[in-house]
Every structure is written in structure tokens, then in C-alpha cells.
Image (cartoon, rainbow, N blue to C red; front, side):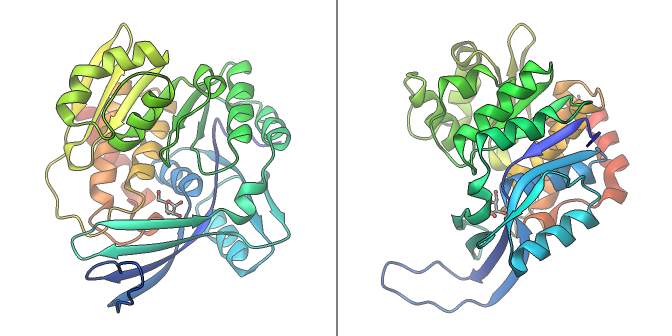
Length: 317
Ligand code: RIB
């Protein structure tokens, strides 16, 4: 039986990344100047970030019976994750085709493959089996019924839940009802609010987040954090106020997976009992550090730096 108090459910991908001056237009072929094969997938990224931040993490997901599946198992085992509920199924593993342009802008196309086969029944059973569960983390890159079942099971066990609404999709009432912390970027929060019938522009600015977040948390009935790239993140907890944290400026090389780094660090800090404002600052600091290196998991601060990042988070508020 898995014992980890922090459980991440989600997808695991192999990221095939081409670095190029600019991404091709429709019908056009352009030449890249670099290429890498790295470990990704929003779920696996968040689990790895949390483990490197010092948390004991269990990962629930599905991979295929192919070479990419072997790569995922090797990488996640090396990170010290509990993998009792990482099942293997026939067919291809999840894969992401990524373009990163000079200057850091990226485009990502995901084929969920095996990750998309996790059912709501399996998700609920896997979450239920975690006796010491304190926090469950999910995103939206797997079957949404499985997401809802996992969140509901975790809440029924008395755990907190963190939902990262990535990629940008409206979410069901059942998902929202079982979410303690909702974490979204500026595009994703607009999709969630539109789906919940709250009028917003397609993409919200820092000023609009500052002005609107209290109202949004009230309408969505959860704690809300909006991540804003180099503008940091803004959080609101009903009854406890709003907090905005921005890290020192850095030169971004590759922002792929930076949002996942934020979520993993935030969850790991919360589970240690670190106050949410500090946990938010810790997520921003780690994500900001990650964009100075290439790739998703390959860019996250190593476990040997977890104490340094924890201390910076604690000193930041
Ligand atoms: O959030 C970044 C991740 O999105 C990449 O690692 C890619 O695999 C996709 O899931």
C-alpha cells in the first residue's frame, strides 16, 4: 500500500523538442538548430517538481508498453516516486511535440496515448488506497471523469485538493466542488470563469487579476491562484486575503513546464505546513529558476537545492 501523503494523478509524456528561430506557418518547413528528447507531461512534471522540493510523492497514471514507457519508469524511479499506481497498457505512451522559438516562446501538441486510458474507477481506487493522503494534485491532461473521481475520493478522505486547470478548458461543477486550490495561468482562468458563467476577457491582465480574484474565488468557491509568467503569481484565500509575489527578473531560455514546477513546489511546501503565501512565493522562485534551463523536468531545481529554496520561500513574506 502506498504511504505518500502527496499524491499526483496525471499524464507522463516523452517531450520531443525542436529549438528553432521561429515555428513554421501552415504548409511551411523550417530548420531547427537543436533538438532534445526529455521527460515531460504535466502530471509527471508536477510530481517530479514536488519530489525535488523534498516531498514524499506517489504518482498515479498510465504509460504504454513501448520504449517511451520504459524511459518514463526509469526517470520517475530515479526521482524516488512511489509508482504502485503507474500502470502499463498496450499501445503508445503519451508524447508531446514541442517547438521552442529563440526568445523562449513555445507551442506544444500532446498525444495523450496511454495516459488517456486511466478510468474514473481506477483513479478512485488508486486514490482510495493511499492511507496517509493529505494533498491530491491533478491537472486536465487526462480523462476528465478520472480527474473528477480522483478529486472527489480525495476530498471524501479529508484531504485537500489542488487542481491545475491546464490545458485551458472549462471544468465541470463536480470538479470545481471538489477543488480546494485552483491554480491557473491567465488564459486558463479565463476559460474556467467563462465555463462557470462569470464574464471575463479571453486572457486577463495582472491588474484584472488583482481586481477580480476575490470575486472569482467567491464565485468558484475555492482558493484561487493565478500564475502570470514573469509577473509571478497572485493568490486569494477567502477570509485570509490576496497576495502577489514576483521573483527577481531572469533571462528566460525555455518556459516549457514552468507552471508545473510552480504547482509541484507549492504542493510540497503546503504539505510541510508552510503558510500558503510562502508556498506561493516558493513556487514562483522555483519556476523562475527553471526557465533559465532547457526542457521540463530537466530544468527543475535539483533535490540538493531544496533547503535553499525552502529558506528563500520562508524569507520572502
Ligand atoms: O506543461 C508542460 C508539459 O505539457 C510538457 O512537458 C508536455 O509534455 C505537456 O504535457
